[in-house]
Each structure stands twice: as structure tokens, then as C-alpha cells.
Image 1 (tube, protein in one colour):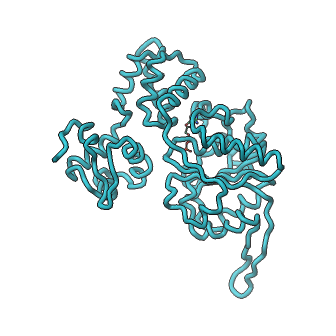
Image 2 (cartoon, protein in one colour; image 1 turned 180 degrees about the horizontal axis):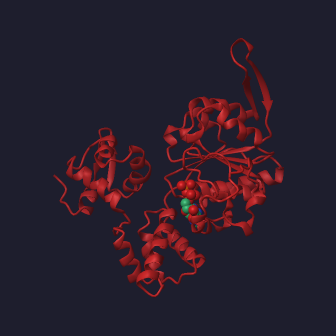
Image 3 (tube, helix red, strand yellow; image 1 turned 90 degrees about the horizontal axis):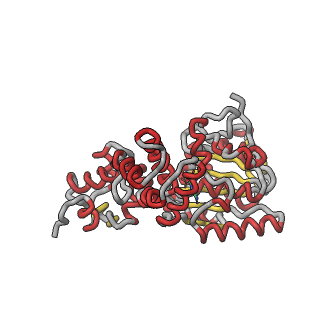
Amino acid sequence: MARKPIIQSSDFDDSDEGLDESFDTRSEGSFAPRVDSDPLASREEDLLLRPTRMFEMVGQRDVYARIEIAVQAARKRHEPLGHILFDGPPGLGKTTFATCIPRELGVPFQIGNGATLKAPKDIVPYLTNAEEHSILFIDEIHRMQKCVEEFIYPAMEDFRIDLTIGDGVGARTINMQLKPFTLIGATTRTGLISAPLRDRFQMREHLDFYTPNELTEIVRRNAKKLHVEIEDEAALEIAGRSRGTPRLANNRLRWVRDYADARADGRITLNVARAALKMQGIDILGLDPQDVRYMSVILNIFRGGPVGVESVAHTMNVSPDTLVDEVEPFLLRSGLLIRTPRGRQLTTKGFNHLGVTPPE
Ligand code: ADP
């Protein structure tokens, strides 16, 4: 398959919606740039639902306002945008921001993933390919190896890298100047980002969960994009069971739409939405079977906690990262769970949600 090293913003103008997603930034080994045939063609709907311009984004108004100012200033001064770090749980819009920003600036961009940046040589092509004022987006930047992190400090600060050519006594270092570019990092674990790396980002933006109103708006807009009729109450119901996360709102909407097509007349009514979500095991708070299982393991095996996340992960046969990144943030925020120095513990609300009387 032919590889194309740089993704030009002209490759994904508005008529060509979503081409930026023609690579999976999350899977190992996929940091390489876009391939010409779209391996994710089956995810056409994902692409359709992802905002391509910042004005289409719902919620995160404070972050939005700050980014808008920085973008406008960079445009006015014909300077590269300062480096930006986004953090927050998965599915809240880090990638969406990162892919909208270059469109606002009208500059090319490249996408990499920290998990695949194991040695400086892995990041060199991105840096040397970076065009003037272009954007380099590194998802899961906390997974980048320390040696890569140290290697990019001078690139971030002075737009230069030190390359070592050859081995042993014949080795020599050359200093290479780069074109001024902007690094956008995204992480679900800001705590794993070292202070020196964090401090090199001029802006650090935390994305928080969305309100039910914001999610309802996203569901309504996306129902329109999918050409499906939806009752207001049904949009509210789907939004309320999406754990504050646009990605889940979209996933739930698509499932409810399938259900409406297969079991009803295609319209999403409140009853259709409720029946569809029930069939997927999504409860009133929006917890899915994995969330409930996590809480049940703490309750039944570890007597409500406190218990270390590794022990729970082991019992459930999932990775601790999945629990920390995907399951716990919403449970913590909803007050169903707390983190103590001795581990995770269900709260009274957590016990009640499982229909169990909390211990004294
Ligand atoms: P992250 O990178 O934080 O995991 P993404 O940017 O991939 O999250 O967002 C997941 C999906 O949620 C996107 O494909 C998009 O459809 C939707 N989404 C995210 N943020 C917004 C937003 N602010 N407005 C509307 N939809 C959004």
C-alpha cells in the first residue's frame, strides 16, 4: 500500500469530510501516516458524526474560547500556534479538537501515537516532514518512551534536533534545524506526563464530561446527519445514558437507530430508545455491563473495598488501564466510587445503585 508521509489540510476539505480518520491513531503500529485506501471505510458513520470545524463542536466552551483566541492570534501574526496538551477521559473530543485546529489555521497536519514512538528514530520522520506552521498531533502522548520525550525537547523549544549518525568512534552528531511547527498532545493520564514535558506546552487544556443538555444537542444534530427522526424525549434519554461522553452518545444513538429500523418503523420514540438501551444492558445512569461488573466485583469479592485496581482487573480479566481510563472516571465523578490511599471503595450511592444496603 502506498504511504503518503504528510497529510495536507487540502486532503480533507469540507467536501471530503473525515479523511483525517483514514488511519487509526489508537492501534499499535499505526502511527504511520494515512494510506491511500481507507482501511476504516466501515467507520464511515464515525467520520460523518465527528465535527470537522470548531464551530460545529458542542460544549467545552471555556476550552473552545481559549483555543479560538490562540488560533486567531497565530493567524494574525503568521506565527506557529503554541504547543497544546489536551487531557481528559476517552471520547470527550481531544482528537476532534486536534483535527479541527489545523483546519481553522489552514495548515497541514500529521498524526502519531505515543505507543509507537519507542526510539528517537520513530519520531524523526514526523519532525523533518513537518511543514512550516503545520500541526503534529500525538495521541496517547504519555505512552511515548522517555528517550523520545527527551529527544523532542529541543524540537519543541528551538525547532531543532540533534541527530547521531554512525556508531562507536565514527559516530558524529549533527544539528538539524526544523520548520516551526506546533505539537498537539493528547492524554488520558496527565499524571503520567513528566513535568519537563508538560511545561513545554504553552497551553494545557482539560476536557471534562459534557452536560446532559450538551449531549442532547449532539444526539439531535447527529440524528439529523443520519437522517433519522427522533423525539425530543428520546434524545434526552439517550444523552442521559451516555455517561457524559459524546462518543458514547453517538454509539448509543447508532444502536437505537438500528433497533428502530429492525423492531419499529424507523422513528426513534422514547419507548424505542428505552427498549433498545435496555437490550444493551445500559442502566438508568448510563452504566454498561462492564461498569456494573466492575462495581459488583468490588462489592461481592472485595466487600465493597478498599481494593487495589490491579486486583479488580485481575479478577475481571481486563487490563488495569482499561479500568482506569474507561470505567473509573465516570464512576468517580458520579460519586459511586472513591479512591482512597488503600484503594478503590464503593460509596453509599454505589451500594444503593447495586440495590444493596451499605454496611454501617
Ligand atoms: P478523544 O480523542 O478525547 O478520545 P474524540 O475526539 O475521538 O475523543 O471524540 C469522540 C467522538 O465524539 C467524535 O468522533 C465526535 O463524533 C464526538 N465528539 C467529541 N467531541 C465533540 C463535540 N465537542 N461536539 C460534538 N461531537 C463531539
